[in-house]
Each structure stands twice: as structure tokens, then as C-alpha cells.
Image 1 (cartoon, helix red, strand yellow):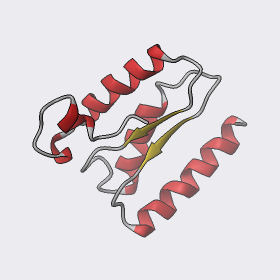
Image 2: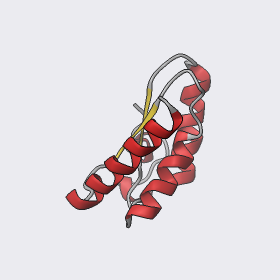
Image 3: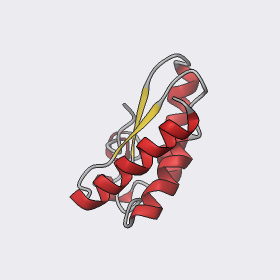
Length: 100
């Protein structure tokens, strides 16, 4: 699990709201290199999922860091219920489309 708490623990921010997608991408890539066979879960940082399309675009960006042998999941914290539902449906569609 690569959590947005890295903002406080590693980057010295006062809270997690300052963590950017680029921060998460950097640390997910590092975790993937360190343990190539691990299942990874990467947080979606604050304000990276303001609407369903942005959520999907950013989830794909983090998801593209995974190699073909594993699924990299994304964690959406504090996300509105309808957007979670939308995202879950789009993710189901992607999984079926890719035959995963």
C-alpha cells in the first residue's frame, strides 16, 4: 500500500492534502521496482478525483505503472458514493475488456 500519508511521513507536509499525483506516481514506481511481484494499492491523492472522468484518468495513470502480471488497485478515500459507483462500473468494464 502506497498511501498519501507519505506526504507527512516522507515529504514533510503538514497533512495529506498537499500530495500530488506526481508524488504518488513517483512512490508507486519505487515500490513496484522494489518488489516486482507484489500486488500494489496506490492512493488517489486529495482532489485527484473531483469528477468521474478525472478519477478514471488518474487511476489509469497510476494503473499504467503495473506490469502485466499483476493488478494495481487504486484507493479512493472520501469519495462521494455516486462517483465510487461510476468508477467501479468503469473499472469492471476495463477489466472485462482487457480479459483480466
